[in-house]
Image (cartoon, rainbow, N blue to C red; front, side):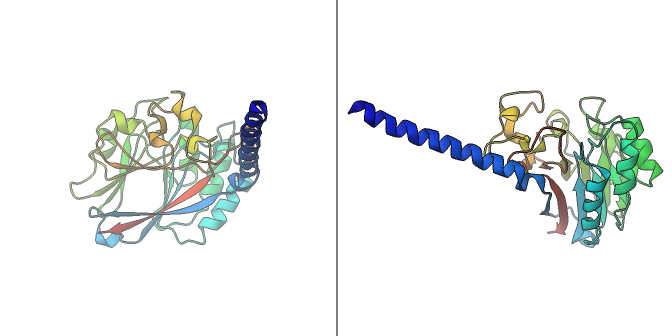
Length: 274
């Protein structure tokens, strides 16, 4: 009798485990292969009234995406009448790949241009040369006044070089709305971010392989990707100073490593003046 009672819960556990596994496999083979164009509103009193409704596309971590795959993204973005395109780093880096990627992404039509930073997988000299070749503006511990009252800053990669938020934002004026691009969000816990009003990051891929999209063992159990666990897994977080940080799951994929409940995305940020 006791043996029969034990068998039933064990069998149910096996069925549940198999079901959960199948759900993750189906997600990896279907939804996690399609790019989401995710609308993210940002409200702040620091946003000038002239920028109310200003639209920004944020593409980061394309990794192994081909030029053909990027062309599809460009076509979608050109339907949206963007004001600005921001590139967050980690693009294909094999010989000739930065040129091919930037040639495609430069076709995105915006009112105020295309800016970008390097990631830890980029050879920044090659990437920045390709960006400049196609009329894009690289930011490397530097910034630019995109419009009156709007200053865009970007820092070097945390793993490969020496990010300096203070230097990147030093050209801004006191009343500017300052948007900071930092490929690795960890830098926002290590440096003073109070000069920025919003930070955009990538790098963590939303965990890449997760349990139902809510827990990523490679972020929680290892310190090789981020030193702050789930804090910067995806979406809204905060810097050490309380500045809002939005972490994109990234737009691309890694060769041979599927995303699981970490659907790739292009983030579409709309600024609103409160």
